[in-house]
Image (cartoon, rainbow, N blue to C red; front, side, top):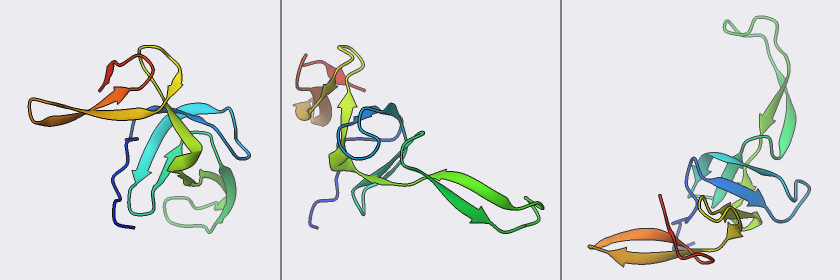
Length: 107
């Protein structure tokens, strides 16, 4: 992949538009541009067996959020509160993300 830049960043609120968790809304906990994936809170939760360690002496089965592809989520605009595509606008030599529905600058 030549372009690893994503228009969804850590802390953005997104809505899942396809897959098992379709319709879920939550904040992005982590963005992984190298693989074009994001980790969304309480979406794509998997169980993982954890060995006992010094920090967690009992071990056990833990729930973790797995990364999902960025194409399966849409950014929720903070102003119009609707899932929207993201555009870029150049102002004062800086790129800014823009909501395609209401035209408001995001960030």
